Length: 181
Image 1 (cartoon, rainbow, N blue to C red):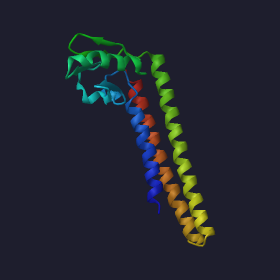
Image 2: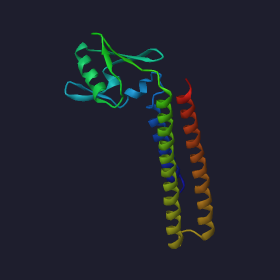
Image 3: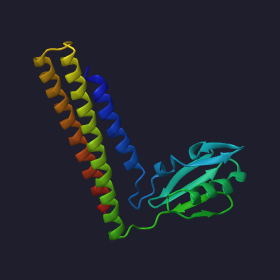
Image 4: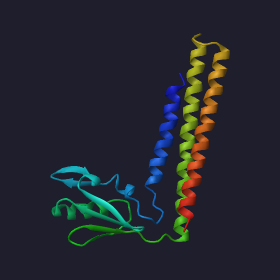
């Protein structure tokens, strides 16, 4: 019975971790390209499927397309994205240089990380509320006893605490990563 609610909490946490993987800490992380699509023979295609993506240095990503004709499309996709990076085209590949983050920018990123974490905690608490409502309806319909309802609510609270703790840990880890120069 609790499985469906735990899955929803788990998905909220996974979503947060996915968002965190896209936040860059001044170091090159190829995951920031995951959401970008390139026009390839008229079809929007994920960046990873049109070329080789490598990280030769801590603050550089190099994208080498399998077809030279894709250079302009890759450049366009990066310029149109919200990455805030300017691609350098050397005729064979696209080079993305990540600037060193300023102290102010790091603090802004940490605020954003905390905000996303809080939103995830709210989502987890909403799942708890939905679960408790579900068990109250079952009690009204005489499908479970009051004791069973209390047990389920206790279990849901323990799940909620567990996932909120995981979110807190994720916030703390990502904040440390961002603030480390």
